[in-house]
Length: 179
Image 1: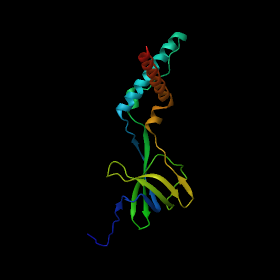
Image 2: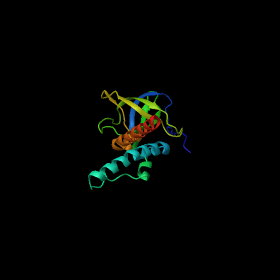
Image 3: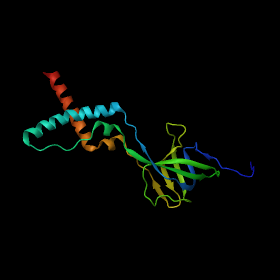
Image 4: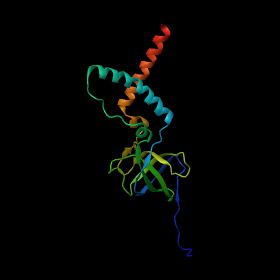
């Protein structure tokens, strides 16, 4: 072996805030948000109560069919978000790898940009820390990547229906205890 070859090791930064220069934005890949089944069942049960009331009213006043519903299997499979590995050289000259979750404008980051990253550790110690916030010191931009969440995956109509169902059950329970 040739001892003159020095292969720089890629490290995961341990600091919460890291300042450095972007070396490379790697090819992104999708990762799925995990959805807890108890939360999903509770939301769907509450929405089902309101759905029954809505179906009853719809059958009384019109002959039209309802909108297509997403299946439990589709809802259980969480939304996907983009994960882009980012390599940067920190102030100490070390090559570091972090992950960018979600999307940013295409012109937001370029190789050689001087950045300050706010990082958060992920649940798996083998994964590099994820970026919470980026201050691009080259352009002066403050960037916050956004990912899909459980609530954005379920959608406002289903969540409103679940709130209506919960309210309906609460009213029925209150009414039954009073009589």
